[in-house]
Image 1: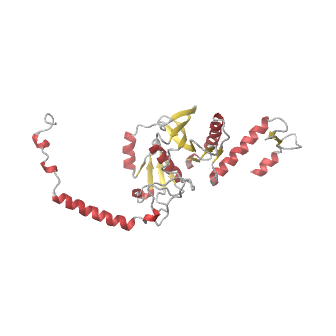
Image 2: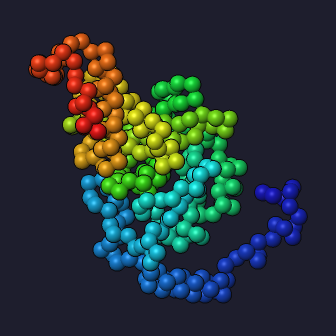
Image 3: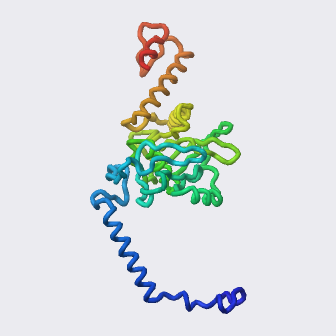
Length: 295
């Protein structure tokens, strides 16, 4: 089929056939690899091929110095990781314990060279979902875990490195992911996200919420929480985050509701009522000292 392109010497395939020597070298290499795997792999009782949300994660083998991945390179930031994530075993001994991630498709790589090669080929400039909110440079995308499974799995692995109680990694199909980004000349840069079940029996509007450590204390978490309640309002449901809350999640929700109540009481009528009962009986206005003490 290449007669008009290749010369007879280049079309010759006699030297490409597999010989007995090739088979012997392959068998010896495979035997050496199996010996190395059996000496370094964790016991079968501690391995799981398909960890799910309902079962606890298996115990992972950590190196003597702590985390397998100690830092990640995400865009222009070097971020120290807080917890270990169940990445494949081939990423257990990466150079300097640093993992390189694409900030657009969230693909993880072993080295800077592979990351730069990926950047030349990666055409994604925003999350693979529907843009459902935009305010100047801020956008929120709704990503379906069934339609964009690889992206959502990478997102869960990324969040595990900063969330202690994260247990969902691969079973992402029953969830929707709402990714908040900030646009610049290069594209929509990832800031944070929250996820929720498509059909929650208890009307949970948030299953997991996370912002990157370099983006924290800037109000992004408050915006994500407020957006989750706006979605519940549009769906005509009484939304609530999934319990129990993580320590950081509890701080975020406490701060959000403190400011939400203060904003409400600035313009609320006298003697506001909660579920048919006066919220502050016998007072004409809410006691501000109450909120100061609650902090």
